[in-house]
Image (spheres, rainbow, N blue to C red):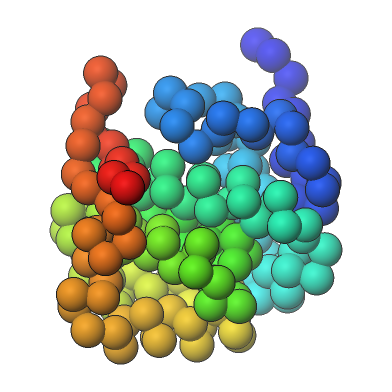
Length: 172
């Protein structure tokens, strides 16, 4: 078994993650990012705040891609835990600042939640305890949007599939 490479959110290049978004799902790089995200999930708001203080923009990009990937994987597997990971990743990936690029992943997480049988407010409430402020505020702001402004289409996504199963796809 190959040694697991550690995801470093402060790395300003993230060359290892070039082409990560559309890569086969799941892939080994998912596990690398998952180790980081799961540490945040265990350690809570202080760890999230520390990650936000150190993260590079390229690290945010990787976490946003991971969030999109986990939303698709959750639909494939029916695992709510993948959606919890997606929310933590997207908050650190820019939702803390309400960044548009992070907002783009939110309809996937919301749609994925419904598909696996959990209501988005319930999922977001659980994640809010992990991410703390300001992520909590922006999760609430997301839920306060009009339904048409939270749809897959509003952010340019469609339901799709690849040879391995369900997958959200950007359709611009």
